[in-house]
Length: 557
Image 1 (cartoon, helix red, strand yellow):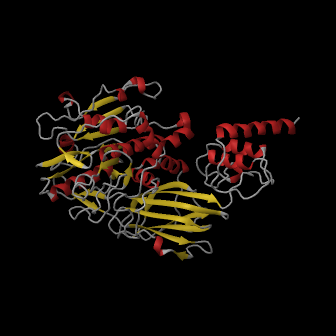
Image 2: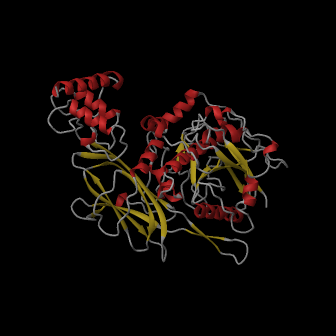
Image 3: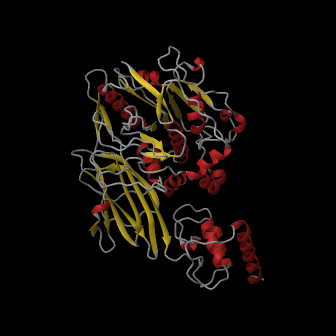
């Protein structure tokens, strides 16, 4: 069976490999800043997960497709992979396992510079502690893992798999739709049965998502922030009508952005290990719910089209996704929930036919939810329909999200315009801004006849007080007692209360809250504007902390 393959570079198919230049430290820092990695690193410090112990794989297209000795292996001597730059304790070099037996053929600049450094590199990636990588050549992987035209796919014990390539069975101009559907069914079977977070590349090419592998139902398709992504939906040979990509990331090419999200997933798999947050459905929901729409002025959705045709759920944000994961699991209720979920959180469970699940969200009095992002994902179920060999039979359940205002009574008013009820996707997305104080209910329904299906649900709610206040003990003064409250709650990522030092009502305790404290320290209590121009915490903040110490010395003499 013939097929064509290409690594992804500058949004075009190539067959001669990729020469990707190493980024400067400033360029790397800019990407890390944009996706929230620097923010998370500053808050967590030494507790930052680095992907340690997470089994990962890189399936790499050869830089010389069709040659008898394919070149696909990373340059194992590159400085990014050596012990001297590794942050693990004790530090160690990256160990490369060659699953396809061709490492001696030569090294691929695409595998090294476009993928490896961003996926698991020691100074460039978000998962520098991922120090064991299994590498496959694409043709070998298709023939010997998916087992095209053979038995069921082999077990594939990896939590994160990167596919920074595109292709199709047949030819570029005359694709073999039946073979492509066979490969995609096997791929979705592999993901669901092995609990893999699979990241696949998308490029614009002819403005239609590539057959392999972005038409997958269970993978996460990754595009690029520039907007050079396909705007046509998936095609008729495999579940048509879905918008791709699912996520975007900043970068110079889709190969790189796919590696970025692979790296973020690896980091989150470390912090979520041993919990349902590491299920493939939940991890997909957590990554997508953390995405931001900042600067994506054309981003939109409808009730039946959950993702934007160009940007999907938006740009990956590692800080947001980590906070969602850290928010914890909140199980849905078959009846009216006894209490609301946290402002950040997730759930993993089985949906039951004709038995809706409910989640209550609370926007406190005196607050506004400036943004609420909810993602529901579930895997397509693939079974064997052949008497011999393996013929994938793909079943896609129909889950939906409905949104109610329950402020006066449970399920009092359904806000139909905010539902997400696609009939072709296995993702639903509720995205709201400017949500006023009140109680709201999310309903998860499963309309599939005779079917139950596991799902992942994730959300983040950005709230703020109408009037920020640093009077954390409500004694009518902003003084040293309030500074100690902020200090005690500092670095709380989610679920913080006003009394813990949350001055702006966003659920965390950080330097923004200190800025509000600094601006109102020792002043008569008045409304504090949301946007403040105050001295840097390193100067005025230290001065305020010194005043707090002095205050207590005097008070308790």
